[in-house]
Length: 287
Image (cartoon, rainbow, N blue to C red; front, side, top):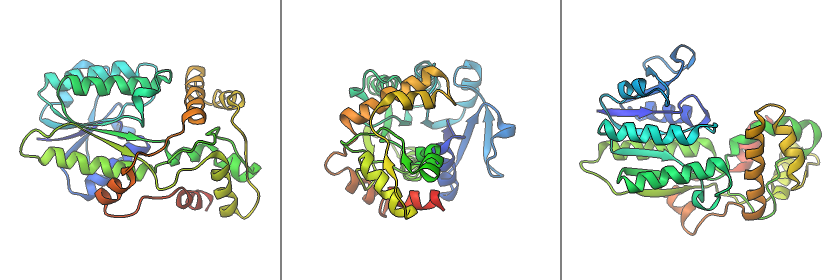
């Protein structure tokens, strides 16, 4: 029996693959286009699609543990629910699911609400699951690097409550640890939820100040107005997705993403090292 990794070609998924390789885990990767996946030699890559029932059934043959990562898409909920149904049909009980921080509260943000629904299914169908709930990805700053560096503006409308932004590499390492723990368990483990957070809780003004320090020049926060943000997003993604990103940003402004007591300490203990900071990533990105 082995682990199956979905969503492996994205930012988190590729790090999960690297982590599993480094831990000498037995795993396979599911992707739509194996010829262009670009994984290291020796990685067992299977062609399939989360909406193709036949390919899912074939991919799940011999699998005991599933890493389920659904990219933001118009049919994300359908993908998640079908995949979990086929997993159960194929006898797979052990799952690590990539959800989102405070999923059940953000009912108007589509990709938050989707994940809340998938979490409910994992619980109601009694999967042996770890639900990972990351906050805003530090790695998203790759998309706005040019605006920050070239124009001295931090443009993400993240507000003044604060986000405990998390590095995708930390998310992936926790995912790999949990996949291996579930896979190697002698029996069925209880469902667990882990909040994935970073070491710093930053407002928009504070994020801009980090960049100013890293670059050695002025960087100002662009403010909380979501109109320009939505318009900019619509320049390189579908309008429905740009609107969804607006809804997410409005939630950042109103609610933030504040760790619960003990979240950070739990992660440091699990990883055996400090969490990667926003400033570390800014230095790397500015470099």
